[in-house]
Amino acid sequence: MKQLDVELEAINFDPCIPSSVDAAIERVAAVIDTLLVNFKGNPILSPLADQLKSQYRDAIQHQVDSAQGG
Image (cartoon, rainbow, N blue to C red; front, side, top):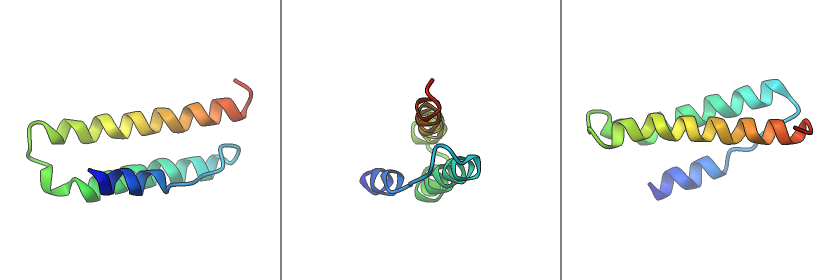
C-alpha cells in the first residue's frame, strides 16, 4: 500500500488542460490496477481498488474545479 501512495502522489497534471486531466485519471487507474492485481479476488482489497480510483478521480476533479475558480 505504501508503494501505491508513492506512485499516486507522483502523478502530476495541469488542471487547466483537459488532456492532462484525462491522462492523470487514466494513470491513476493503471497504477491501482497494476499494484493491486494480486488482490483482485480478495473480498476486501478488490472493492478498495474501485474506491481508491473514485477518491483520486474526485480529488483530481476538485483540483480542476479550484483552478477554474469553482
